[in-house]
Length: 509
Figure 1 (cartoon, rainbow, N blue to C red):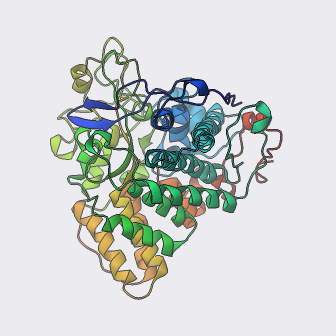
Figure 2: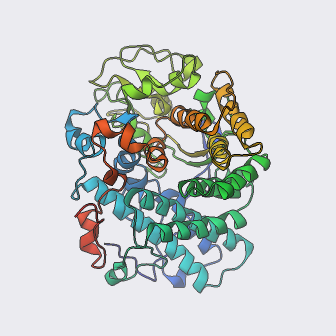
């Protein structure tokens, strides 16, 4: 149950805006604190909105929402359910394996309940900031940007919700009293319309670029890229292609090489980065900037050893490993093999041999870090408490713009669209060290794009929802137990009990 008092909606500035981490300036958050309306000063709206950047990431008590966006519940919903990732490293996670890998959904799963609750809480934080802007009549340029940021974040949360649950309630107001939570579901089309409106506002009012001290803050390019993705899910090919072209023509981004370096510390906020949820962990920093995303996926080793890099709850599947073309550089940048060399510095490794640590054959190399990195940061002892908590979440990359543009153009067809689609795909393939392909027909190019999305974004939480939106999930995931009804997770019982007007998805009576 969300209980946000109307007079306590402001998230104040608690830490400096800029930190220097691994030689890269990072725009990080303010710790969300509460104050009464009487405490408002100039810049209070700025503080409340900037606090959303941290609320979406940290895994602590309310109002932090990281458990729903950056921890196991989010990774389970967005990762485990694909054919490319699984949870096999932790023998204590058999229930999660059955629920998400094998599609034995349960309405009482605490992870699904946390996923729902934290998304609704975060949406409430966005609405509180927007309500503050409206009641305070904040119309200055800086506040308009703040409103655009809050609307982006609200759309981001609702995109998760509508893909995961289908019909959900649309909250466009702060929840002050428990009864405010009682809201009927809206249709999927209505939720997407709501998301479209938020992202349209964001792309029209966010800046193209920020000064260096705000590196990583939301931009119009991020809003347009996010909107293009949302439109692809609605098969609105023309508008999606137009937004992708806008992002490409902005000349703000480029494909970064080598591919493996995108996922290392010195690849954070690189030229390919359109939006990242940033994280940082140094000794005695009070866990202000950390994230569980890297921790829950890191190599799972014995406690206190230099291979205790995480929980190992999201590991590549044999099917993913077998899916790469020969010579694809993305394979060795994505897959870490138990009992083998980590590949050395040319593929994002450190010259280590990965021991056989569990029954997991493979590990997610995109969150792989060296134990010496912990020591250099004053971490790692006595129980390696940092465990990959400084890994940024690469939410939107320029390669996605290229491949979304290719998909939209190919689906539109006609004219030069086939040639354009092949050209954008080949830019991504060239970076991966692969030969170019030619456009033959729409069906052939569709298959090419599907393959490229799979290997380009492997372990980046695109695969399951791509399969669903393409209509391929029932075929590809059938051996794991998937049926059509599994495209949406049942609404958790905890959500039903807190909202008297909420009803269960009809396929999950």
